[in-house]
Length: 264
Image 1 (cartoon, rainbow, N blue to C red):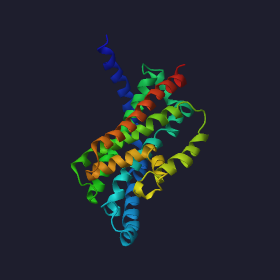
Image 2: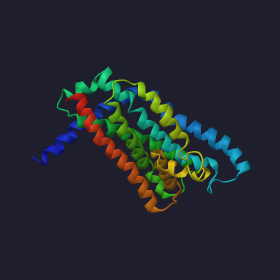
Image 3: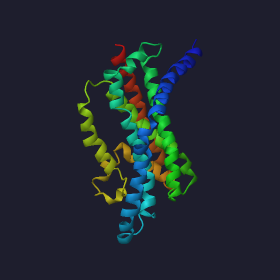
Image 4: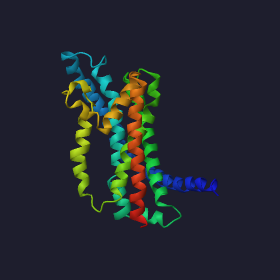
């Protein structure tokens, strides 16, 4: 029996994954701009426009042109935004407004199957976005190491680290009123102040430990190290461990909140 149950569990949450994949196949055109084109525009405008000013006044940034320096970090911010964009309003809509998850829970699917299917689809989409974006930044010359092949996997980990806890949170709230506050006071500062656009050495000394506590910082540092093949392996494993711990905690929390919302 124990050998059969995992197989059945995989078959159940694979159906949940397939639902999201089929739905996305009908709506993917609306997300191309935010997932691919916006980051490219950021890269072109900041890397070329601002990069010209940086080169004129300061020269290289940590041995890289400004365009190459920010290119990997924009992969991190893109996958971060994908994770939060798929895990607040869409989840609340599915448990309250259109009640898709309630319909799924009326089938043999368990709440954990719904959760695993949702998160695995978001990770799949992030990985595919990471493949495209890795090719783009490689064309700009911002991938200098074979470790750059890991960038789509790192992007998927970043997405999961945000999608899992945000899905758990969205599954328990009754209103989307707090979502705007999260965007304004958490996501926007995180996007701007995670050493995305300038090195952490540019911060005052007392702020650097604070920045290093921000989850997105670990993603930015990890993708930059992989793209350039730089940094200590131990440090990079620490970044992976932090993101992995956040993801696992989010999954555990999501199993509780989704079950309470759909069953208890």
